[in-house]
Length: 73
View 1 (cartoon, rainbow, N blue to C red):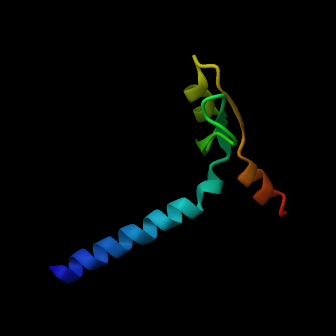
View 2: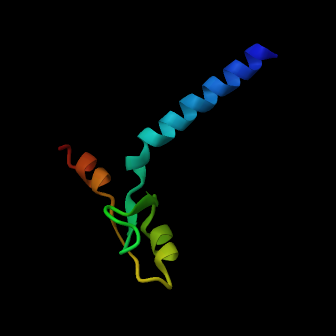
């Protein structure tokens, strides 16, 4: 039982680390006064970002980390 718990916790740690490192896969950021720079960068599609921005003063922009990675700099 202890081995199962250890393996489960290890797998969870690895998966969460992969999720953090793939943050640049989020291509769009919700941007506005309350979000700072570069904003809330959790959106993989422009449509999803725009849906979250609808009805607020926020807008959507390209995630700078994604743009930087895509251009190979």
